[in-house]
Amino acid sequence: MKQLQLRTGLWASLLLGLLSCQGQHTNESSNFKDSDDFKIIGTTVEHDTDLQQLIFSISVKGKAGASVPDKAGQMDGAPVLGYVFPTNLSPEDVGFSKTEGILALALTSHPDFDDTPLWDENTNSIFDDDGIVWHPHWVVLVKDERVAGGLSVKQFDKADTSVKLPPTNPGMPMFMDSPGFPVITKGNTIKVVVPLYRMGHKTQFKFDGVAAYMQVNTSKEGLPLLGVYRVYSISSGDLSLPYAVSEK
Image 1 (cartoon, rainbow, N blue to C red):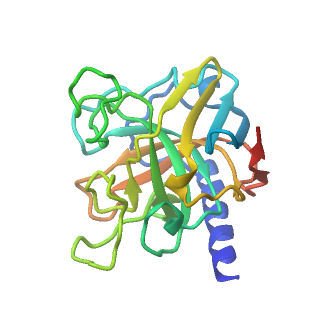
Image 2 (cartoon, rainbow, N blue to C red):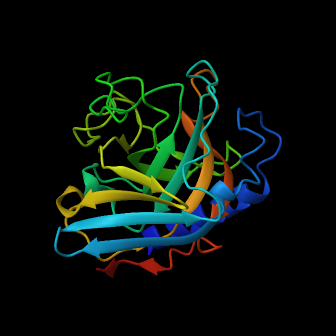
Image 3 (cartoon, rainbow, N blue to C red):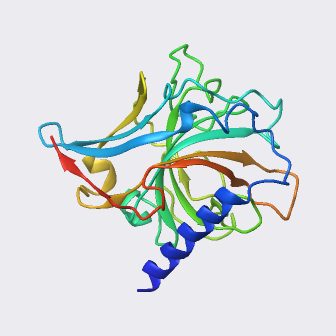
């Protein structure tokens, strides 16, 4: 019951953020708010029983993944765009230590930095120059009223030895992983393919779809390291996580 109440509160915070994301300076492009590239029209997760993998998919009115941020020129204030799948899975299912929050699979683009040091997404044999290429992260989201969107990626004290992250994490003091799953953009759809063994063979869970703007903060003590500043669209309309995994 406690976990259900926590999640209900997070959904309410995010919906509030959708209505109140004015007033705080961001490096968000003015084109994003009304772009069809972030107006979600469908969200699915399919279980491929032959290949034992899950295909997470978001479809939009425009062209999925076509819009990417402009560089801010530094890490502080760096813009991050995301197509996000909030779930009711547990953080432990993907290798985090036990912690409260919402486990989400986020597909992101951010040209100012690269947080996937193990993966060469643009295949140029340089591993730290392709943050703008759409790529996945597992993140744990928590309520955060310091930012307009009402949520941030959960942080932790670097000295806390009880925190466990997957070995593919990017080395930041947040509940974030860079799992390296393939992301495919085609037409109005963006997809990511996740092997079942990489998420505890979980095939029965609920999820939703969100398109959002996030931003990095490294200078203001009163703000999170990575916060949600605007929500462009929500697949269900109310973040009720109504969708279930289907089989193909």
